[in-house]
Length: 377
Image (tube, rainbow, N blue to C red; front, side):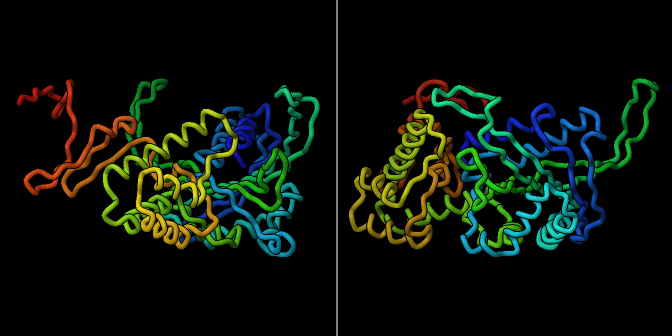
């Protein structure tokens, strides 16, 4: 799935656009025991409650592709004959009318997922008459080209509120507020099947993790029976490690600045083209970046070998997962310097009288603890 397809689905989570009629769910305690299961018709809720439910479901496909949102692919053998794919198809094809399949899904999740609090599993089914998009980009609502049927499932932590004193205006009195349970945004979720090329792809599912650094491999294994992909944070740490190990003494400030600048420029150029698919870089693409920095050939060969071993020979990676494109950071054991990526040229390294220094060019507007200071010769 790409950003445009995800945005198209996100626009459906409104009372006047969605065909979701029921919310199925269960409540799980800290001991991973299912306390209760429920089937809540949206028609029994008022408009404000329904909108809040849609807001909770919408969170299941939020965030950035490659970070919070990961495309999960089933093998051909899984699609042909596997318990995990068969269960998802039962749920989708029955439009969540198969109670045994629903209970089995809840059971699988509750046995696999451990959170530090109680949580809700919410499950919904929707059918979307995909509008026809003409070659000139015109949207034709009455000319449906496909009916996309899918399920959406999210894991929502339950947080307990603290007792508090509140003022009740209508009574003109103070009263205690009792402890209550609040539904938090989803910790993880999935959508099946994927909405690829604006139609159902039974070989793919979209997986969501609130924290890109913690993608919950136990949940991925329980639902997809697949090895969890490397998280965005793991990719960034792996890339740093490969650079340091393979470049050795060539891993200088200038090289790292140059790599960061090139990756940012590639991402900005891609964004300017308004391509629906996110930019992905192959091993050869990243090697070319190092060549442009003037890195020695033997160090580039070492980089390619380590990159293939850690990421995979044919694995493409988003530049957003290799470096932080929004900031440039220099860190020592005692000092942290963060610079606008466009002005990384303000920092350089020097060796003066045998001592290593970081130099930062400072013009006007220098403040220390909020106070403007003067710099004199």
